[in-house]
Image (cartoon, rainbow, N blue to C red; front, side):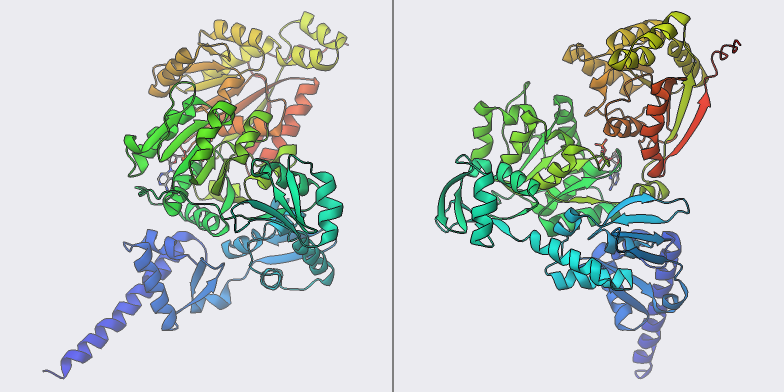
Length: 621
Ligand SMILES: Nc1ncnc2c1ncn2[C@@H]1O[C@H](COP(=O)(O)OP(=O)(O)OP(=O)(O)O)[C@@H](O)[C@H]1O
């Protein structure tokens, strides 16, 4: 009897191992990839992330599964049997163009590549095109150049001396200047050589930036000018490392009540590892929630900067809903209310004003969150980038790469942290919107001849304001009678005309704040089905249930706006559609197509149709 007991236990533990291995296979099936992370495993089982990790480690010790470290903090796991059979992925390097094209990349490869390259596009055959840019090497999270080169060789599978030479020079370039705190408490800029200080830094920076030389390679720095110094040297091709001893400030107790999704967990881990960064993801992809995860991970007093008062209130509500923070922990600081608490949400505008910013400077922030971070570079917002903090986190839905301010954002705040959009759509976290370009004929001949006889901006305005679009809007709304719809416009006259024609309220910059909030509230609650919105509706205001976005005009300006407007319909709420109206045969038509090509490259379906409301006028010979 007694001898049987241990034997039984052995049997049990063998079958337990088998059960767990089965669970790994099941989870792998569910994930749809040949490997998984511990977080994924925990999500597919009843285990907590820690239990899941321990379980995977045990199986790995037994040799049933294998582990590969993706970074210092992240690992992927795969059953030993699977290891040999799945390798459909192909990585091709173009060293001269500094490009890598990957067919069927798996998550591991993507995670590796994202450490030193940027996803630029997908090619026709579904391959991913990565590009290595200077700033990607500057921002690589590796401890040493050898580590970086090892990751590169590992993922590329081949060595290119030419590319490695370039990577080495960029790596070194990013280590020429650093900001540090002197033991007496003031800030010092230190150059790698006397020559760099004498011939690069000092000529480019003036007395406002550098107070006095300390040695040939060191200068005493004006603390309020650190952001400006970083920007100036970055523009000269020398990113500055920031090794200042910044105080984390008082600790806060904060727990997140939601479980982060895998990719959010990954963002937070990358952020805490780097100390700064910008979460880049489509609207609705959970950047705000991930930022709360980052706050919980840092657990220091936090300042959140937002572009508008509406957003401040939303942040406040979301923090109370999703974290253990209470109203007493959270202050708001803007035109309407002014209180500073351990977690404070302020508008960029107010925080940047001289008479207020001292208050923010006095407090030691462990973390500053810059929401809608593409706002930071404009002069008024820029000032907030100087605020002292140990950690900086930006949030943006703007994937555009060629905007002038992008580099600046990544210099002032930190390197981009993201997941490619296609993957977020594939996994169903963000509903993929359908974007349709509808070509609309002229409403009347007078407009058409006005278009022919004007030029420049006037010409663009005539095409944008084409009254033919009003019929088309009526038609589109009638097609989708139950859909909550937003009509976006650029010109006030046009907004008023459309608002009258479809009998829907019009919100513009001139609409008083209280009325704006009331209308958006009614829309949110479903009491109002349609709103006409000028640029003001573009950013910062959450319209979670818009199912149809009709862009009558105002896609212009930048790709950023295009992406943001598309984003308004990209809510996880479900079926979302964006219809962009363009006057047929005008420059608007080409313009809209160009704007949308960018979204198409992000994996969004873009189609083009002729307007259905009005038959195109018969061609006269
Ligand atoms: N881990 C999660 N678990 C459950 N729900 C989540 C999670 N992450 C995000 N959500 C939900 O998804 C929605 C969008 O999230 P969030 O507001 O964080 O996105 P966002 O990227 O910040 O959007 P925007 O760019 O518009 O500010 C919200 O309703 C949020 O509660």
